[in-house]
Length: 252
Length: 252
Image (cartoon, rainbow over all chains, first blue to last red; front, side):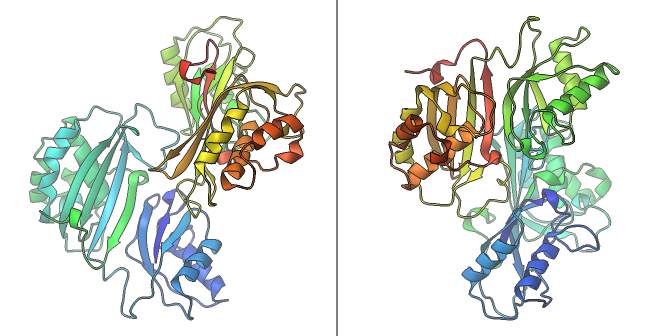
């Protein structure tokens, strides 16, 4: 099933002992629907506290026969209003929302206003400093392709292999909102990777780093070189891919 | 001073005994700035719990001499992030933010999506039923001019005179957001008036009321005839006018 959620009142996707999470909220709804059966929910991946999703994908083995449209309606009627189920399908018993992904699209919104906009504080990052989008546009292509992204992974992760492929990296200026919209599509992303990429891109745009710094940072494989992490509030898991990467996001 | 606020965590503008309000929050900040002097804050009018402002105007008598730009900075540094001061000016000692208004602009956003959008639940109303914007466009002009709006005022208000002048009433469809954007400019609005006007307009658009029903409702002066009230979440106090109504909003 595909779902969206406003992450600002969730402590992330993954179940925790105390705090409210997306996974727990879905499992509770399924517990009610099955009148007391525990149904494990598997997501395509975790999203951190405060991170949003427009197209998170989950799977679960439901003990019963409910057509997808009815399942969407039933879950939406029982879930809190900061979540919404958008689509559903009955899949092969082998399907796994996490292990079968071939790619993900993340978006990051950066508000450029002088002050923190009260209406955007939970939904964007904020960069009130001078920034030249052309410098960022020149910098981003260095990320494309297969690289070791050790410099852009938060320390403490358990995943040893830091090699990922980025298919698409782009930034646009939204004049109406006075925002930068970053889009990244890749075969997978390390812990905090998008948020570190965005923070570094903004420093390049600001002139505090040279335009070709992404190249150097990939080479040095040192997390201490790419210091900043953009806040969770601007990050959106847009789509998760299982069959193919959409045409417009493929490496040219 | 002109300020914006995200109303969803405020119990409205006006001070209350217990709940968090905008007025109280500003007064607390001024109390700190003056190191313990009570400075009364006067708004252009109340906004209800959950109602937003893009351009609320307040005045206060500050016991000291702080240039407007510094006052904006000082207040913004002390106020919570769901408020923002946008402009300020030193005004005549007689100026009163409420009594000197000559007009206000309210906006109302209606999300038309099938389900409640998790990202919009605090920022729009929601109308998931069929609705024909052309019917609403034909209906709105009946509101223009001076009328007794008794049918559109929540009961329980203390204000006896229900005659107001509406200078501008418009609706547009925002395709990107799949929303109706209603704009109303008038010399004043009764309690819940914009929210009742919007709810009635949607019923006209849906075909549950005839296109000329605004005319009849104005005539009958009966609150029971215009039943529904659109939720607070979609309402924005956009601007408050003291000198003149902007050209584009004047009665043609």
